[in-house]
Image (cartoon, rainbow, N blue to C red; front, side, top):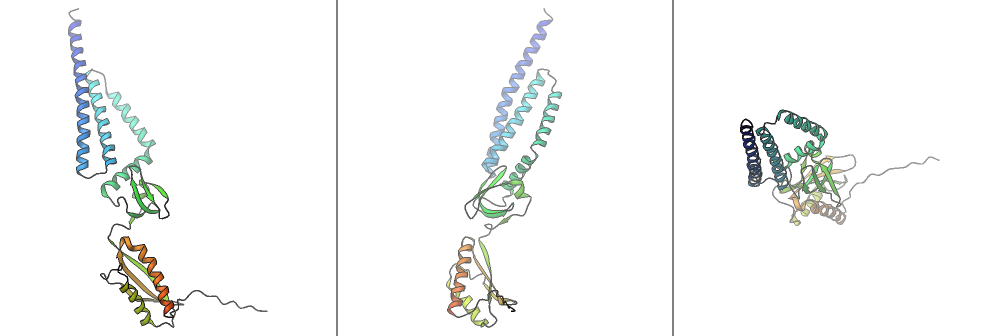
Length: 263
């Protein structure tokens, strides 16, 4: 009986220490998780990502705490670690595509090639960014359709951000007939620029003969505008050019076909 008591006392202390490790470890894991959230918020990291990462930190910490507690009880933990590692590898292989999207989502949030409300072309889709998630990005197309794009498709391909700069250039090609007065055409195009306050005067617009094509003289008509005014200026300018040319009897060539019928 005297031999058993020291063993019971030792085992009781092991249980006490194991419980202490669990309690203190759980408190430390929670503190570490909350502390990581505060750090990520200070770094202006996306809230969705910060919560997700803080959750991973908490559960990984708790796994370490549980293993340490079991080790305190004298339970062999090597096999447990091996099982966890094997399970982690199996899950990783099964969720390979999801993990790829997750890693891409982290890169998008950290490096910010685009943000909410930007108009972008990415992953074979063009639209306004409505939501950036951990695994997918949600876009709204110009015809008001919602498209969900996997983050890996975005980060592994070219991203064109039309909203990244405050200004954009409207590039138009204006064709007139060879019989038109070149100087008059340039004067009309310049007048359209001068009367539209949305078109910037600096940088100076480009109005120049760009090509002597088969059926027309083509002018390069390049106008700098605020990014928000791009499409309004684009459409309004084309309409103004047509109306002004009609007023001044300037012909805009169009494809024609001569058909010869042999009887």
